[in-house]
Image (tube, rainbow, N blue to C red; front, top):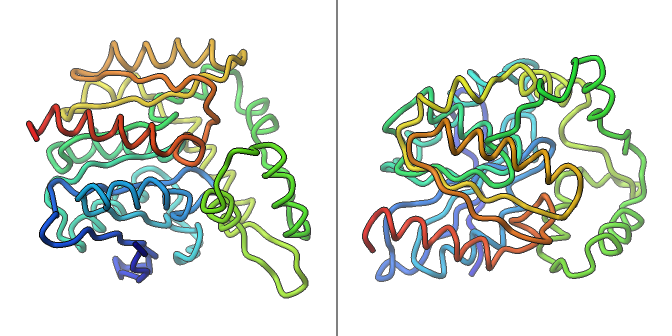
Length: 285
């Protein structure tokens, strides 16, 4: 099963990857998958394929400034990003889809749910959606801690080797999807699709977002899928997840022990199983 790659015009050009099951097996609702900061639609390939194989139409997209989508000068705040998403839902004719977002993408989905209640059927946060950066300290400190390394000019093959060393169990699809975060240049080196300036503007918007204010405005059922790798951050993460469970009207959490932050790449089968258990419970399928 292969995806259909195309572009849709919502005022800017957005690249999408659509996975369609056989018509006789098509189920509702459709899934719309949202990647994280400096990531891209292809990181969802394994999850999207599994969902489509089980009968669910699935679309993954490159958010503005990312992947193959248009690199606009402005619009890297939550209002613009979620409006992009609302237009995409309308342009694709999706009727109350399940929105799943990873990391920053989870916080995009949170903002979407608060801003456009009733548009989605369910919301899924994949190691995101509960991220509350301002609690970690002043922006001057956080901006230095989370500033990405400058990978322009880094050899493509060397980066692939490093990913395989760090994640020896990742599939080739997972590695290729992760490498699609970068443009491969003719000299064999890479550069991120998302520029550093735009990366930092998104990070600042994430820092300024207060999830605690947004949680009560979300009407849809929410599934939080959180990775626990045993690190110190996992301890802090549990506090933020608990705040989300307290603030959201209808939410549950599934912990993925030993998983990387990119659960969708690291444990796609387990993640899809949890998605479908949640969706089927709500829809009665």
